[in-house]
Length: 329
Image: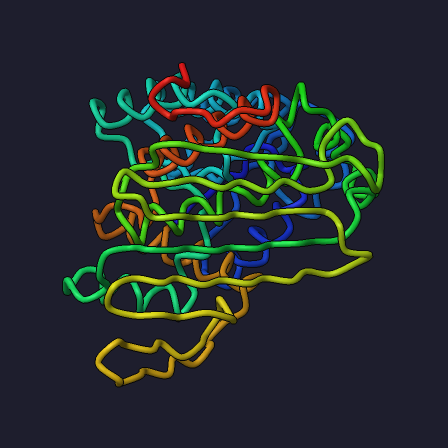
């Protein structure tokens, strides 16, 4: 398959290049508005500063797209209107209503649009999704997700300083890691979020973006969920996950753990890949689904309610108040 990468200066582009090679895809072009990013791209193919010129010149079968968060929705709209099948990094924008409009346009035009909510590919999450599909996951009571990572200075080192500017990134770890935790709640529990209360701190690095954000929300049935994300570790990552329903409990390792059922039985789920290894799985599976005419595992439509919760969290951080999701316009 002939594939192009839009926004090759994004720090994830290297992972995609390696994954595309492993999947047997041919990279036929890359683009980035910054010429320095194009010069650093370790790929032998035509390079463009405008993704629209790339589309016209090389006509790829599929595109993996990246951009500063504030520009993502406009790029997505351009790709949709060009009829170009693509996958985009999360969060796909900074305003849920704007993204909802593009999602509707993609649906109306029948354009394949995937989003990199890669934790859906972890063995434990896939097993829980199977239980949900079989009607065996139960009614959600409590959900918890924590993704803590190392210093934000690495984004300067990777020459994506825009990640430290809330005007371009939307927020810090809330917009970087928050989509993963919020998505898994919506994906597994299938219940809309009613209210959101969020707090954040800048106490470590004193950057314009937050060091840590803690988001608590309640579903329409009263389930309680907490998603915490940060750049508070000196280095590396730590991930925690738990789900409590009226039928089961699982808590600990998001990659693989034991599911305990309320009838006394249990099910051990072995980790098959790390969270970082989810990106190659996502890349290969997305290309396969597109080639076979199947929908993506996570689509642009799935990102809309996630971004809506994130916007509610922003409002709550700003006001110090509980925010009703329906009121976030």
